[in-house]
Image (cartoon, rainbow, N blue to C red; front, side, top):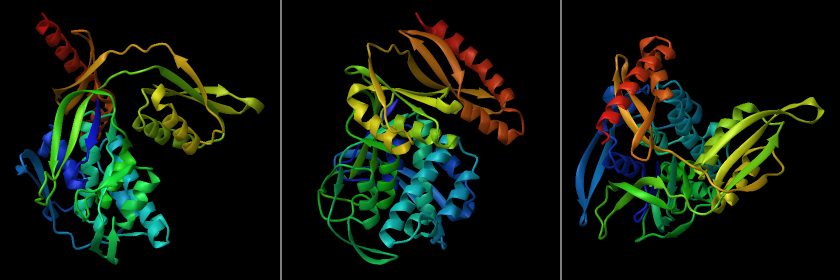
Length: 395
């Protein structure tokens, strides 16, 4: 599934959460995610309610935090997230958002990322916004996030560093580094917060995709305005358009730990598939062929990621005549260890396969102190039962 963030009135962390909850991610799932962080349960709470923003019904997420320690460094926040019992993708993306935010703050204040004091964005509510947003995207099975141009307004704001011009310096740094398109805001003031900018810069590709719409999530801003103060998350499936290309590059001099982040960046930019093939290169050195399938219209973005995020000096490209795909649907099954998401494979109107999500199985295995294989096999049995029930329901 893909999603598009339509930003008529900007974005903050709680607006992002409102979009996800309105789109079907339960507020209990949000609370469960935050409960896995090393936070005192008495220091925070999360509530969601339906409100009207002009003529539109939207979800307002209220994050309440009694946080007296607002000054945290990046290593402390990184450790808090990495120790949490969360899916690997959620931990990695959450840390990436904070690392990008720390880099922007460091450039603004002339220091290094690890020495940056996070002020407002290091408080509990910002941690909840960022970890919650990445978890919601994961749980809704949103593989690629796109976003519209970002509305920026002028004015002034008070911060821990004193009075600052708007857009906030960190917000500008984040959006500039992501080469984000901007447009004038509907009124003076801060319409994109540093937290919102960090989420966009890390997780989104800017531009409206060609997609088949499924449902819409509408998140409300805190302020009442003369127009609907909302962000809208469009969820659906990508519509294949135009030709496909396969990009490849040979690499033998890069830290293997970096390939995962390169793959994430490529998928975020719209890649259909990414894989690595081990090869032996000149002088007997082991290397890999990094391969990407993407729409030809997305080729420039793919090449930019490959040249910037890897050590390669060049990328090969060749056209592909077609790519045939099965439709996927996420379901949930119950196991003795807890609920597990199952990916159902459809061909036309026939369910032909079902496989448990590894991250869910690994999380339950850690919680219960058993091998991941045990949880996976239990989930696989339930997946087969689900498949059989779908087959009986098919006319």
